[in-house]
Image (cartoon, rainbow, N blue to C red; front, side, top):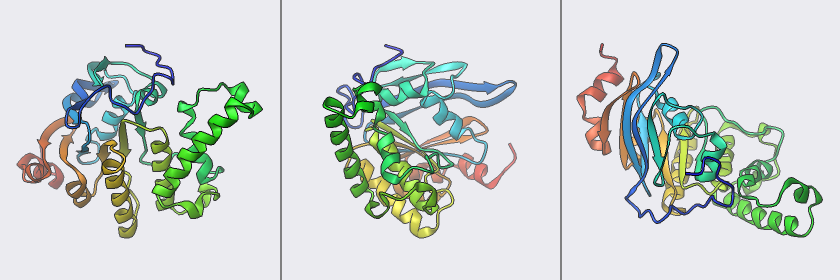
Length: 274
């Protein structure tokens, strides 16, 4: 595996991986911070084309697991295999170039930039012209800019945010900021999209809108999704499979109906003593 993939190596394609086959595998992953164990011996897979939920009470290790998948953290034990390539350590920007995009619990946008500019920023990993060409904005760089702008406009239409395309995102309500962040992640054309509590802080109407867009991203764009979400109604409605963490350990893994009737899961959410 090339530890420093170029943008030319990136592709939304999955190297011949068929729908339903394993796209990503976490093998016996453990992560500690000093003497604190964030996740312990976690193994699970994500199959191409599915919506895979990762759930658990606060402090269960869910976000730490996403941070391992996208290279923000390096586990002390275990490996991640993505599109057939095994690795323990990877920088986040290399993960992006390999096809993993991410949204965050707290919106991470450029607040002074417009919706269009924020989503366009997601295309930077796919641009082939160097910064000098981009500064000149002429010839090949101009043509490339136009092609990427077309892709961004398609995403804006897809997410139904045409009316805010020129609005600085810092002036937008929270629900629309979350939608812009989703658009920026989609602009990277990921094979795997990691959504960290995409509906946190939303009202019911905003949750319904975001749920619809997540389903459309999965079904219409064919993007595999790993989802952290606390709203169990949303999880059970959207997910194909669910893995449950508690105190950094996996306590259940299966389809939604199996998981919601699992006694260990019920105990974890009810706060039964361990």
